Amino acid sequence: MTASRYRSLLQEFRTWATGESAVRAAIVVGSQARVTEPADEWSDLDVVIFHEHPEQLLGSTDWVERFGPVLLTVVEPTAVFESRERRVLYRDGRDVDFAVFPARALAGLAQHPEGLAVLGRGYEVLADKDGQLPRRIPGAEAHVRDRRPPPEEPQFQSDVRDFWYHVLWTARKLRRGELWAAKFGCDGYLKRLLLRMVEWQVVVQSGRATDVWHEGRFLDRWAPAEVRTRLPATFARYDRADLARGLRATAELYSEVAREVARRLSWEYPEAIEAGVQTLVRGTLPESGASP
Image (cartoon, rainbow, N blue to C red):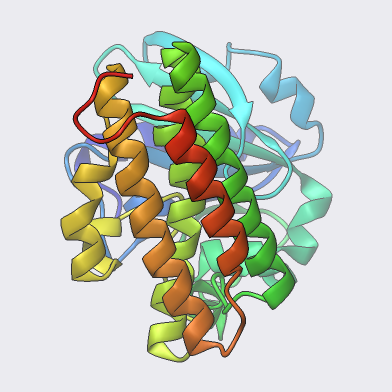
């Protein structure tokens, strides 16, 4: 399944992994192993390595240089689990994320919810010296959908309060002229909360746990059409007047989506909180069209 431009690298990787006794297993995950939303010419390669001494790989670059001339490499946290990965950009443009986990984690991989969610999208075994990786894990596909179950009411109420608090926080930063902070508030922090509410909206509309990917991946394919139509207006230029406009648009869209989620789940929406914040925001920001 792996794209042809990575095949030679993986052949070299297999040879290296076979000769390294501390490497107990390795798999390809992500787009290069998926059937749904498979890799294209811009996709990277995600390799998970189970190693007896992870810090040896994370603290060294010699081993990644075996697979080609390296332009740059950096160690970052992994997107799932609590581990790290060495990201490598090769001079020919190939982009590989080598996530490194302790070998002992291999035994529980197929039982871990996050592990099942990753494996459920597809994986390819590169090495399995202890025979702990089946070619297919029954039921793993279901855990992909289960990654975004309907919210619990306390979490919903907490998110709504967090959103409205930071609407006013952003408005005050903007009024003070702190454009960087206001831009982060409008198009960073508040957008993350908006994304989660849209995920919940999709889940409650479908009436079951639904696959909405992660971190907004493929949002333009799974989000409701009305949300997709209105999203562009919620983002703002690095400009005081446009940030005020984008903040209002973000708040309006969030309010409508959150109200639908509350209505479908028969929960009370915190009307008084929204109304109180909106009053304070109107006293902080000028009317639309006026310069802050």
